[in-house]
Amino acid sequence: MMSQTPYEAIGGEQTIRKLVAAFYSRVANDPLLSPIFPEDLTLTEQKQFMFLTQFLGGEPLYNNMYGHPMMRARHMAFQVTPLRAERWLKLMKESMDEIGMEGPAREYMYERLIQVAHHMVNSPDDET
Ligand code: HEM
Image (cartoon, rainbow, N blue to C red):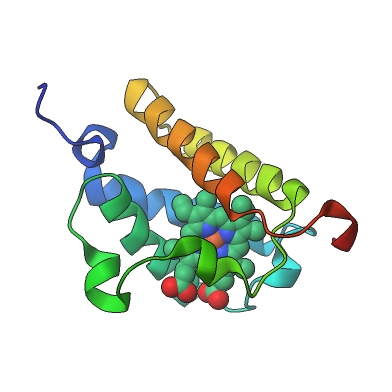
């Protein structure tokens, strides 16, 4: 259906729940990313679920709870280097593979995440 949002096209809540679970279990075990994340990723995963829901055209769950995303500003407290951005994207791609996402909606989502990830970079690699 032409009027479908990307959120609907990827499979809605179920897909995003599975995706964030797969993604943060990778983050927890990643030597480059885990040091800058909290040990308990429960809330991080929940926030990302809310953010991705609205990012793809679902309900504005993140804004309702936390206000304007200002994602770059919220990441300034963490050293987001080019290497960390590439790792973030690699783990996201692996997570999409793991849960069986495929097709144009996946490609669209991933392309947009590449843009956001690059926009988050705020430190050079030699600080990693
Ligand atoms: C929060 C790292 C890219 C969305 C965080 C946090 C870290 C982080 C360390 C704090 C976790 C916490 O305190 O709970 C990174 C790194 C990235 C990256 C290294 C590499 C480029 C992205 C992208 C998105 C995103 C591409 C959007 C799709 C979020 C959200 C939060 C968050 C929604 C929660 C913000 C809040 O506290 O309300 N990120 N991030 N991040 N990140 Fe990222």
